[in-house]
Amino acid sequence: MTTTFSLVVVAAGQGSRMGEATAKQFLLLGGRPLWLWSAVIAQRLFAAGAIHEGVFVVPAGCEAEAEAALRPFSFPWTVTAGGAERSRSVLQGLRAATGDFVLVHDGARPFLTEALCRRVVAAASEERGVVPLLPLSDALKRIDEAGEPTPCPREGVGLTQTPQCFHRLELEKALSTFGAGVKDEAEAWHAAGGKLTAVEGDRCNMKITWPEDLTFARSLAQKSFRTGMGYDVHPLVPGRKLLLGGVLIPGFPLGVLGHSDGDAMVHALCDALLGASGLGDIGTLYPASCPGHKDRDSLFFLEDTARSVQALGWTMEWADGVLIAQEPRLAPYVSVMLSAMDGALPPSWRGKMNLKVKSGEGEGNVGQCCSVVSHMVVTLSAPAWLSGEDF
Image 1 (spheres, one colour):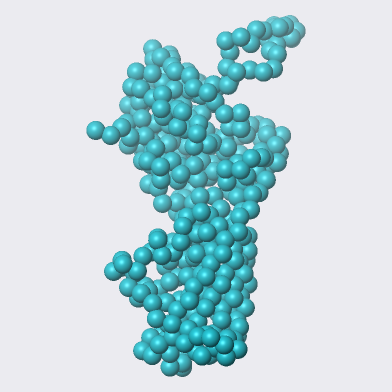
Image 2 (tube, rainbow, N blue to C red):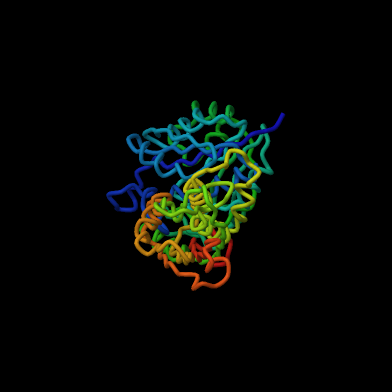
């Protein structure tokens, strides 16, 4: 039987040390709340078969907001309300999870990586909990009762990170009995008599606790950019609708031929998004051999494509397109096309597209009114750490 893992992201605290009216996990980093970056990694882990679900624990009353933020993601997810202290919040997450094992991660650690999660998962066992540790590089001092700093040895001491991995039911028992006041799940596990295995942590997996931490994190979240190109051509034939840019063009005797609705403009935009994000091409993801795509509205493909691209952490910065047709005259429809395509994109991407329409100048198939052609260029951005590039 396959062992299953749930990623439980704990984002239910108040973050009072940040000195902000907004709980720290909802502060923005690279245009997203801190906790939502863990969902991007959950998407990648799910696609790779490393986890089978994500559970997000948020403050009571914030469930609807979290659910709205998670809708673009295709991995199975659950949102639940947390408790008055960390151990109660984690217990709520465990009770909502279904995996044999849980990876419990702090939502205030936005720079989680797939590599760290894989190290933790690889060391998982029913008998032992797994914690990521980092060796100390700074000298330590302990403040004595008189307030005097005295040297403290750093040998054999490590900084503990998340995610920490445990057998779900055994961790639930440990937290139920020993969870009061613990700083992390490993404390409760150890108090219950459980053993721990350490794996190498990640220096970039910092916890946002103080205002300076967020300032530093924002400096790390510098953007990386990618560009994708899209192209499509469809014949014009009698007996078909003329759909371009998601808009039905009335009063023209020819329409676009295709397995779907043949919308060359939307297909080119999909291909440009897929190319920039490295997800392949529209023909592979939505093949003409699929009966379900017969005469399908191409705005469905655009909405689904954009959702997949956004779930990988990418944001559309700009799109520029050219639609070439001898007839009919398409200039009056440009603003309507832009509005139709915008409606299929995530709200934060809208208003970032330019479209030009050109004549075929009487040349070739386009010029003889035998086909329409579309070209599209898209620029995407993501924080450099998330796109896999060096800081």
